[in-house]
View: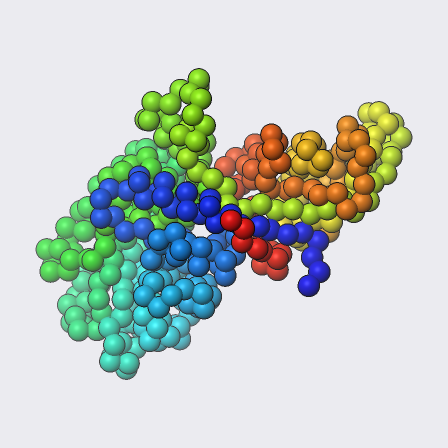
Length: 391
Ligand SMILES: *Cc1c(COP(=O)(O)O)cnc(C)c1O
């Protein structure tokens, strides 16, 4: 009922991002929208229907918990795929509910077969293979065992996919590693085919891979960050611009910036006060007033999703001005420098993510630290901040 901040989600931005991503895919490539981490903090409840309305028919999540959430809000024919954690008991639930899931260990493959027999219903499997990320995925020496087990139990599963994940497609520094992974993936996929297993979907690409290594798109892509209107990295964005011939002086902003941020996050000024020169502001000594200053408090701190790493780094917009977060971010509030803001008072709108005419704070521009921050800060947005969909 009460909340110290609010999130709004733009329907128009969702449409624009889905359209852009689809345009970047080769013909016939299936789009799976990744909605793990509560849809990158945007909210599964709101984003699943929004993505569906924009033409998405398949979702990827990390865990069975998230899959169950997606099921509450998706339409019947839409697919869901679990890429990570499943309790052993959840395998039965997944099969019964047509949830597709990754298999990267023999135990899960055995469980899938066991429950498929019990339910007399085929499990929809995505076999994940190790190609060089060294996270999850069957290693080469176990593949024969996997294939043998599959041979013996052909009636109990559908091979929905054969998949892997790249270890850093967002940076050219990983080029050789990614190229090795692509080669290895093809070798393994040949092995499956030689044994009579044709996966319905070969899929390997996340946002960065789909953009920078288009050959990784194969039959399906698993796209997260781009759909929310952010680039996986500055590098991926610049590579996109260059490959499309957009230069510095290109004036068509919309062409150069084809993605649109979906999320806006707003709060209000809680209190305003003046601080004499020389005083330290907030906990400790991380910020000292170098002149007479005016400061405001905003009731959003790290407990509410505003990372402590944005202490003395973050920016917000108040009364049309971009102002700095000063001192350390507290658990429940932050302090901002409003010395230059005239007529600021309690209740004035504070934009934490979003824009106001000319000024914008996107997530990455909080600190310009790294685009990896986008993923982290977004996904940490608490689930209980009220979210509302706007046109
Ligand atoms: C998170 C994730 C993705 C999506 O990554 P983006 O960079 O957000 O597109 C794809 N595949 C796997 C296995 C993931 O964990």
